[in-house]
Length: 394
Image (cartoon, rainbow, N blue to C red; front, side, top):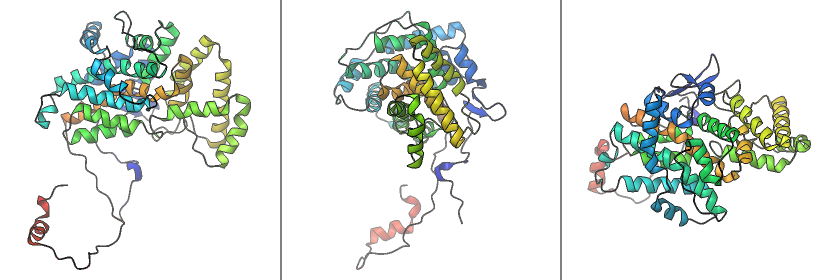
């Protein structure tokens, strides 16, 4: 009997030099660096450089990357028009997916041969930077238009994280907020063969282009069992209301076998190594905004759930309330994930292109045995194809 690995659990499908979880230290490593060290010391765009190139940039290399990306920081008129064509109550992930498709269609316009659209490593580094530079304006405008506000122009004097917050809110953010936001972008930037990254690699393996692969990854990330979990955490907080209600809410949720989002992880068995860094960022925001009620609810739910089930928080648990305190709408949380994770996705896309094999797993059929239509007689063409099945398309 075939050993089926549902969800590909435990299946190793390829090598990667981009990231891993070190089981000895329980640390997520980007190109060998513990992510908590990167989050504490590096700007988000330096970490993107690391993921794309294998090493952290020198100050000169980082400035050169920023200079190259500046033309793409503005919200392109065609992208704005595409977003504006969508209903105001569209999910922001649909806006982001559409925007990436538009950017790709414009960038690849005039390329008739789909193989030429795959691009060289240099072209795909430029495309990766294009998306990374453009997404803050896309995500920020998505939130602003739902509030009836116009887009805000980017500022050359602000770094990636600070500029992102500026375009979202039109106010120069306090350093403590910039630091917390930057840490979240670093922590979300990459996580080996997760569902959206694997989706991007599958699409890339067909020799499709980088923009198609990122669009597919966005679709995978939208799901609440993946990127949508940080939204779900905030919905849970809204339902509970305050710490005093946690016990009754949790008893009811567990009795109805409800999945508690923000807890548990396929990879981590001793707790998500990214949580302490993001939790510290959340606590700094609680102090900054004078919201001890948020910390009390956060701590109480974690304590009671871990005590009952022994399942620990993942990164989405502290990031949800942190983004809420910064002023982001709950629906914007997963697009923020996109803006960070596009660095990891594109790194994997380029790695897949560098040593490609079509990803095409098998399945074990458990449907009806072969059966036939009564009265059907095959014609000669059908018989010829049946005799040469290797000539048929997959």
